[in-house]
Every structure is written in structure tokens, then in C-alpha cells.
Image (cartoon, rainbow, N blue to C red; front, side, top):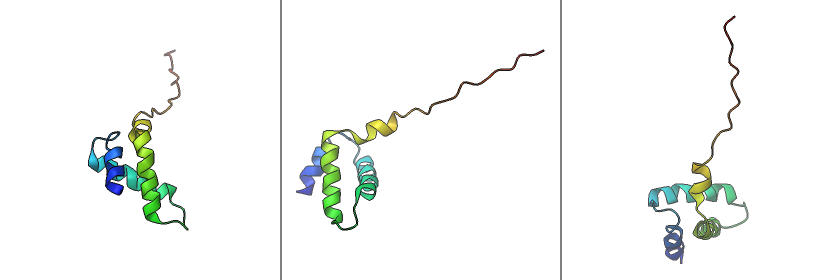
Length: 73
């Protein structure tokens, strides 16, 4: 049942609103045209049980280029 999948996914994401947002974004990205949307959503929730979906997005650090400093003449 989907409620079991939701409660399993809540072990990784403690905020229900954040879980809903992440699940909807992942469902949109993973959905294939000839499959049911419900199956894609269930697959996303199964993936969320095993890994923390917000961990990789929250810890991304942009790579900065070193800034050249000019010296006064």
C-alpha cells in the first residue's frame, strides 16, 4: 500500500511537506509516457526508503574560481 511506502520514506525525510515536494519533482523527472503515474510515484517512494533524497541536493557546493588580485603599482 502507498501509506506503507510513505511511512518508509519518512524515515529518511522527516518533514512531510519536503517529502511531498521531493516526490513530485522526482516523479516528473522519472515518469515514462507509456506507464501509469501511480507506478512511477510508488517507485519514487521505494527509492526514498533506501536513500535520503535531500542529502545530495542540500550539500552541493558550487565550484568557485580563484580570484586574481591586482597589486597597486
